[in-house]
Length: 392
Image (cartoon, rainbow, N blue to C red):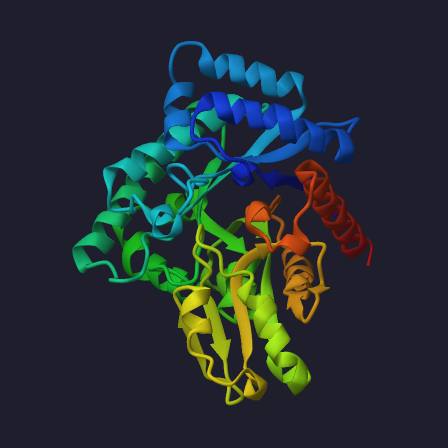
C-alpha cells in the first residue's frame, strides 16, 4: 500500500473540559502512551476539545503556543472528536452528549472552531478529519424543519471548509458518526440523509468532499450491520468514509452459552450497566428479529428466565480492542478485523482512531492500574493487525 495511514487514539478517554486540563491530560497520558508505543517517531492523537477548551485556544497566543507544544512533543492531531460538546466525564453524561443538536447554531460554531484550530495544529501537507454527532438523539425524531435546518448548517460548514481549502490548501472534512438510537444510526440512515436533505441543500461535489462518514465499528456492530455490507453501501452511494473509529462492543450469544451458565453470563453482563454513559443494547432473537433498547438496564429488565435465553445481545460499551472474550462474554473484535480488511482498499481513507473511552467505568476485573499502558497495548495490537492485513 503506497498511501500513508494515520493512526491514533481518541483523547476523549481523558476528563477535562477546559484547555488547562486538556493539556495536563496530554502531558500525563498521551506522552506516556507515545513513550511506550512510538518512542522514536511522532504519534497521532484524536484530539477531543470541549467547547470551552476550543474557545480558549482561539484567544491571544494560546493556539500558537499549543501548536508549538504539540510539535515539540511529537503529537499529531490528525483527527478531532467533535461529538461531545461539553464535559464528557461528569458523573452522569447519558443524553447530554447529544446536545446541542445540529439544528442548533452552537453546534455549527463549535465545529467551525474545531476546523480553524485543526488547520493551525496540523503539519503542512496533512488532511484533517473531525467526527460529529448524527444530528440528534432519536427520540423524538427531528421535525422536517429541524432536518432542513441541520442540512442548512452543514452546508454553511461546507462553504467554510471549501474556502479554507481554496485559500490555504488545507483539506478538512467533517464526518457524521452514526450511533445507535440517534436520528442517524445506520448506514441506510446516512444515505437517506445525504439524498433527501444534505445534497439537495448545496453543491454536490463540495458536499461529498467535505462531509463524510465516521464509521465506528462498535456502533455498527450494535446495529447488527455486517461490516463489509455497510462499507460497500457507502461506496456505492458515493459517500466517503473519512475515518474509522476502531472500537469493540460487548457481544453475548446466549445460545452458545450452556444453559446452566447463562445466569452467570447475565450477571457478568449486568456489571456493565453503569450510570455515566448510554449503553444502547440490541437483542436479536432466534428468528432474526432485532429490538434496540435505549440503555442496557432497559434490556436487562426484560429478562424473566436467564436459563432460557437464546438471543444474541450487542451492547454499546467500548471495551479494549485487544480483548476477544472475557469470562462468559465476547467482544466484537472480529468485526474490527473485518472492517479493516474492507477499508484498506479505499484509497481515500487514511484516518484510523482507536476509541475506547470507557476505561474508567469498566467492570473491576477489566480495569487497569495504568491507563497509558492499556491504551499503548491497544495501539500495538491495532498496528499489528494492520501490518498483517497489509502483508496478506
